[in-house]
Length: 235
Image (cartoon, rainbow, N blue to C red):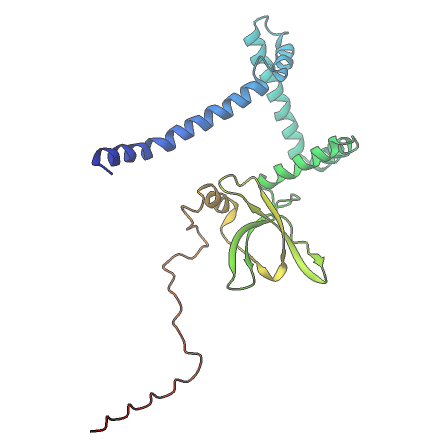
């Protein structure tokens, strides 16, 4: 490869993460605008709410956004008060009584609880774990343990773990792993996510030992027999 090509590739590798970041931000912004923008269904509802303050479409839209934001803030104040459990129970009971909608609501609630930093939440105890497939010394996989509950299969205790996918750790696979193969990983959920997002390029995180792994010394399986003397040649 010529020097000109190497220099171009070096510059490309520097600018590429910036370009990908901008593309991702624009993509997410387009999704948000299409969902809650002035021309969307949600946006039309917000404009209707704000028409009492102004006849201008944009001013009415902004007024509707402020009204909804204020309602959400007031709901947050209620949730943080002593009525928190009552509000959750009332909303949960109403939503779960609706066929199909109840399952979607429950799934969405569980997904939000994964990233919610609350120790008393249903999924607040989700923690990173090591899964040593085959037992100690086997292949080690970083996974998430949603619950410490034990599932008995064929008389043996198992844990249900979520093995994220790289580089999008919000997906993955549910695996039933023998409980004796699962050990805590003291790296935090953020550390686990960063490893999967980086696709293992930066695997060293707090709680993961670093250093050069040396192969074990070769040990003879039994006593070495003394070498037989070479017979002297006959003159």
